[in-house]
Length: 102
Image 1: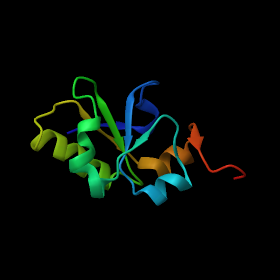
Image 2: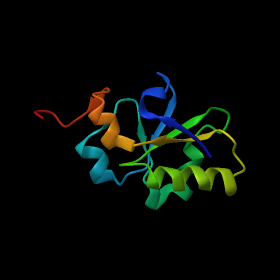
Image 3: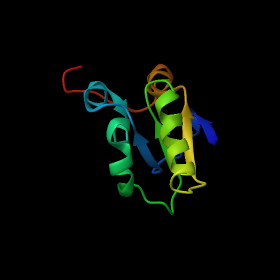
Image 4: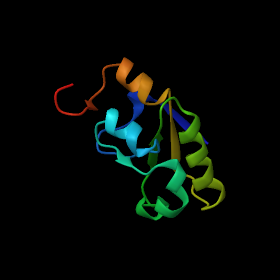
């Protein structure tokens, strides 16, 4: 499985956050689409298989599972796990979406 650090996600990339909806609502990397891991097998059709898919979660574990699913079950070779996840994204002060007033 391919992996990148949070600062290596290209602007405008297909960027998927697999955390649960409540986690995603608290804060998420700008530009992500939320496809929770608990629903991932049914939602994965929303991902364009012809474009690299950068997958992020809280710290890297669930995103690795999602990338592995895309590789093994769907035969993709362009699923990319984002190491360090949202925790590191926020720590590096990268563009983050938070609820209004926070």
